[in-house]
Length: 415
Ligand code: NIG
Ligand code: FE
Image (cartoon, rainbow, N blue to C red; front, side):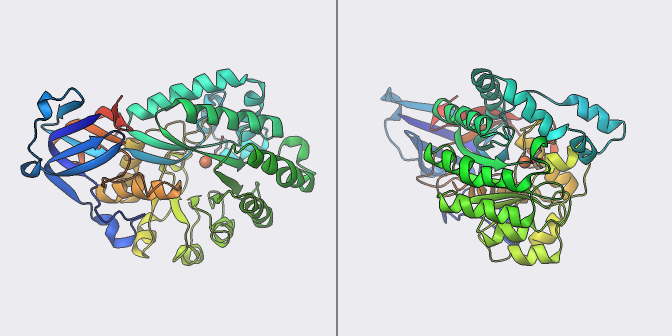
């Protein structure tokens, strides 16, 4: 099957160099082709270029060819959302109201709300129901332009429930057209282990991780390394165990304090360090030259009214920056990557170009897939979206809250 997109007003995020990430000053430049074509063969991008170079052939007579006229519309590589918790049992709008009335996120967590609240609800919910709900969320984000998504466990907390969550993610991988990566997340200490941290740590490294690895249920291992959650030492032990079982690390780090999470993540070559609201010169120095993608989660900072990660400083230091949605019921109940771009521009002072790199190629790197996703290049998977008629690509972050995406193409197929 061949799909030909013609008369594309602007083909955005073209990268013949096939870079695996884009850092520093280069983030301000996005390569595009005006009045372009793009040819998809089966699930891959076969060719693209300016319309005048469109190969002449008898496409029209062939049944196996589908043509789409994209006059006035732009084509982008799908967003890669490298950080979500989109398998969950229930929304938490009660806590949202409590916060409006003055409680903090940490105070709510201390009272057994927060992650522990989600864990309780998830433990009670049958696997099939979790699956159905999560599939609806995937359909929602797919219509908003996301073509690849990482999904974490971490609302299970017991071995049984963590495995349940990861099996749900495995079913989503099998049945959704989105590219999905799964991550085991050591998220919090359950209440009954609060005074027995060592025992829970032993359970994580001697039971949960080995079992997850033996059933091949996770691609990565993540730890919430922050004040009130996992310490640097505990994080190191979990990341080390993950690596022993062939699962690269990721970290939730420096959201609530200068937790040392960034440094531990870098030490264990974590693929990404995420959140980063508390990021000073030391953390920036640790990230420089590392293999760890600094990942900012603007939705969570916006929803919890937190201080913002110093994105401008990071880019000026020469770092790459990725952005993801953190879609979850407690700190970011939205998986809308268009809105993430808007927040990037409006709150973090990023240019539209910088947010494009942050939500495509850099976030693809943060989930280990930037060889095959995250930019327009020959041989990459054809996960794309066609916009409505728009005047320029900056209209996407500018029109916060709107969905300007008209057509979604995943694995070369129009959805
Ligand atoms: O990435 N920060 C830790 N974990 C999630 C939130 C979890 C929750 O509140 O349910 C996050 O923001
Ligand atoms: Fe998260």
